[in-house]
Image 1 (cartoon, rainbow, N blue to C red):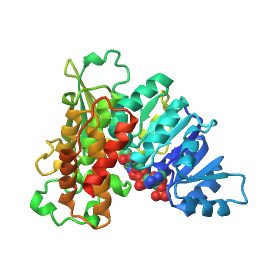
Image 2: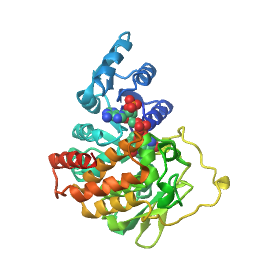
Image 3: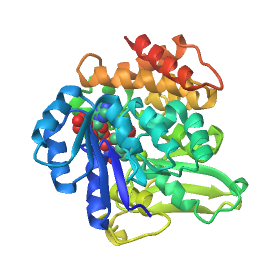
Image 4: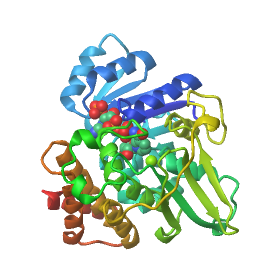
Length: 378
Ligand code: NDP
Ligand code: MG
């Protein structure tokens, strides 16, 4: 069980909910980091008294230094600061809640210090899953998933002694805000339409990924790495209600599922308290009034991003880094109003065609694949 936590990306959706859990469970905070939200980070620092507060943006770091001058909190900036927060000696656990591939270096740094990683930053595993998991094994660092589906799988796998008994992992998928729509209707969808998620309130990038179903594709790759499963043993089922967070099917055809209200504070808390469970702030599930639970197939033809991610999962090597880099760049362009909703899949497909895949990649190959994919999107 964690007692002192460093949060990378504390001002975001996962970061803020992590602080709620930490406050409720009486844990301490060693370091907090953000990109540019100075005021939010100042408020959090005054409330939680970390040793270190980091702004990725150097100007914002200078501002924060002035704001916190009356405290003994140290302020740092840039990637150096983020790396310092990742390895700070007083933390036993690091929650990686930054968005995007920028989380890769700090995650590796925390692993090399043997910290427990509460992993929310899925892009890191999609780009460099093999590398990250190998390092975690070498340095004896535990990686406990925060993503709700992977936390569900982790919980459903407790007690399983022989991975050979697992027939397949089944990831549930809400279907996102555009469930049931066809390409012709999706063409004119705007930023505001995509940001209206039916069940979860999350950061902008992952909300768009949920609308394109890229999020589920990234999660298939994430599950592949976390649980050492080939892609053909991972299935996606559309479950609109987001009550079942994922399932494990065993070789005797038993299915074990984890249920709960759609509330990220539960998987965040489990990553911090594992192997213990303690009472916490997550909403109780009212099973008697939650209505019928439904299941269906994802529409891979309309939601091409999921299909592209499944292709990348089957290809392996740097295909995940190419898929992710292109997607991060395309989603940023969509959020900036520069491209349409359907162009996201178009851009990702183009990058996957253009950028050559390397197998058994090292960190350099992953970074190069990411760079080339972003360049292909333009
Ligand atoms: P948000 O956009 O809400 O928050 C992102 C956090 O990272 C903020 O603190 C932000 O700081 C910081 N940040 C953004 N860009 C950079 C950068 N370039 N360098 C350093 N820090 C940066 O994201 P979410 O909390 O929604 O998601 C975080 C991660 O967790 C993502 O990988 C997502 O896929 C994953 N996840 C999220 C879930 C959710 O429910 N939200 C569920 C499952 C997984 P600032 O505020 O200054 O911009
Ligand atoms: Mg998820």
